[in-house]
Length: 315
View: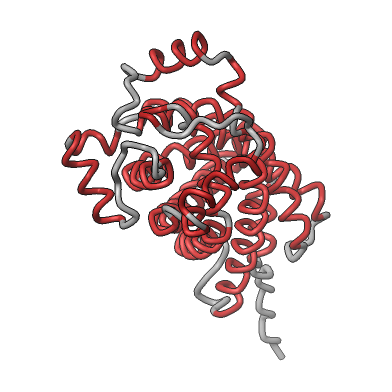
């Protein structure tokens, strides 16, 4: 009597964790390239909103930049004084800084996360610490160009492009001016990044668990949605330090305040004395409008780059 042929066993399905682990085992240079592209795309796409935020945060009661605290009036003031091109002033400095900084940012994050998490995708503390380490390294690369970018964004900066700004700052204020806000930037971005990465990883896991059959770690919509939620939350809780950073980077430009010291406490006191505690949350709306879609763009672009390199390595 003939026996029925046994069905061949199917290979076990690849889980989201296994897929993520495989895609995270890329070469260091591949992580840097993917991060560089993601950072450049993110900042270039959202640059006009960043310009509006800078104008709103640099304004003080003694500053002649009479932008209102509302987004609509700030945009109207910029367009009226210099036209639509003013929304893109300083984009060259952003292009020079964003790519290298994000290359360092993501490669350091992935390397630290792999070392600290020990293969556990639910290790929130490892994600937070990895994000802080990535921030300290990337801010050292990005802070000088961020300072140049913000000075060029202000309509009355008086600089003729990126290199003119770099040369004049070196000649008039010295090399230290490029890092005047570095401590504030790190103190702002450390909690920002910790909240951002923990929220991102948690949101990504939650989305995958809601519908594991139709959603996996390779779907860009997962990274875009999780990134947007994480970016908005992190931006909302770190706005006061971002205001301090902008004031430090733009001091003395267009008549804005110049501080006797570069201490965060001195800037905080000056802002509160002149504008009240409300002055510490100036620009929070455009900041959230920037970081939510920016994080969605950045994470989806970054993960698309990782997927490309994973397939490239396999082939």
